[in-house]
Length: 325
Image 1 (cartoon, rainbow, N blue to C red):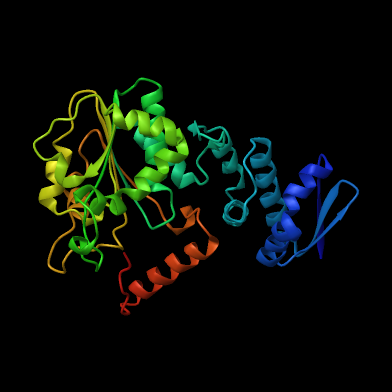
Image 2: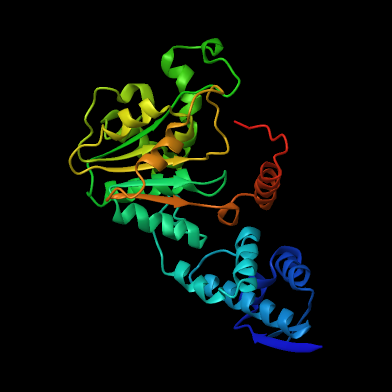
């Protein structure tokens, strides 16, 4: 049996490392088959040599996040565990220096995974970026955060957010109200991100001044969008023709981010996804970047990560795997 100790600087730091009801420590004990004891200012792990080393490295990553004011939520702790197990615990420091924006309530927005960091770097460095990955990886929210940052920094003059209004087994025509009422449910995730980052009042003011536009993809036809940060969300539900139409709306001084999950395509069976088509057609084109996020980048409830993995296993085994909208 081996032992390894880590000094914790204060009672507050120890409380954050342990988590509510010691949940973080229980995660570490279960992940690495070690026993944790806190005495004095030291957290001591006991177990097999490789296991105690991994557990200590995971805590070092957690402490690096705390020093950068990143809260130790369950998903954050699980990510530190994954990095430690892969011998990449030192890469946690790559996340702590990154900063995107502050929400209307003062919460700092930072990448929570290395995949998210690569995604943000691609957006900064390329006029067109494709962000592809499963639900919960932050594709849309981070793109909206980058759009708000560019707008506030006067890199662009407006923000344009769009989605294809594709029905996931439901009939749009039976929804009550006028056209705007019918399409609003499809655009709600985009509204939510803007509300969080700008606040309701500022969002409404910018919307009225047409400095922010949130509209269905069909409204983009025939337009040229200059000096804009343009986001196409749920792009897996575009046709190749729609994708080409959208990408050719890009005007001078504009930046485009396309997000989608190729495992959740709601198009009719015989229709090819415009996202899949574009990823193939535009491969190697200068100025176009493609970033693929995975289940390890999921930052929602930990169960979402396990659901994504379960579906991936089912698909790999060619088992029936229904698509969920």
